[in-house]
Image (cartoon, rainbow, N blue to C red; front, side):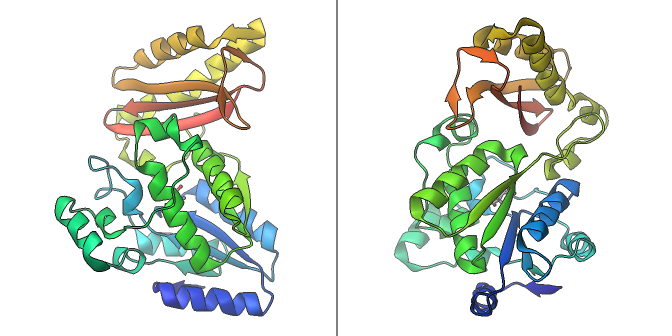
Length: 300
Ligand code: PAF
């Protein structure tokens, strides 16, 4: 397994693979890997075959964190991640630092950096999806998707993948990236792989490690809410979204340290809110468990 930390070296390696006709599959991550990430690696391997190259990028991307979010405390453990990647048969791990990905360039960046101490300030060119990123995560975290699309576009330019695999857990992110790829003609096939869950239904996420003591138990409430919505629709066939949102809010409030941020019911393609929830409607929610904000989604 090769470990590459320089952007120039990554791009050179990618272009060499391309010239040799080797297929590249990319799994973009922010590290602190878990079984969910490893399932994306397996999916990438299936897509490029044994002669292809599977690249995992590990980069905690500052531009997708808001000023009050958990950028500095986001879990990081590169040694452990590398071990997991080796075990999963990854060919290349790309681990650039902030300065590699967002080098300080020119006056504009310096001016921005004075106002904002985060590494975010080092970027002055962004890729912005303007439609699908306005709701749910985009409404709750206004600069989040701009950071995601920008870093993913950069990764596509550096790694030159034929396929890139994203998790269904971040459904809105995956759909926005699909749109970006279509709008900007990136020659990349986007694969969305199923969410991997813990035994109690909690979607695997690097942020789950913030959940200490009883908070971990309470976090199962996201899955309970999805199950409750499913059961309602199974029984009644159709149910008003407004009423189901109230029921989800009540259910979440049953746990002592939880707070519903949002719940939405929508048709998935393209994501469009619905008034009546029926079988096939998609549900997405964000819930604070203590100070940790978790998201989940599923087809109802
Ligand atoms: O889903 C993530 O881990 C991140 O948003 C991504 C796609 C790696 C971009 O930083």
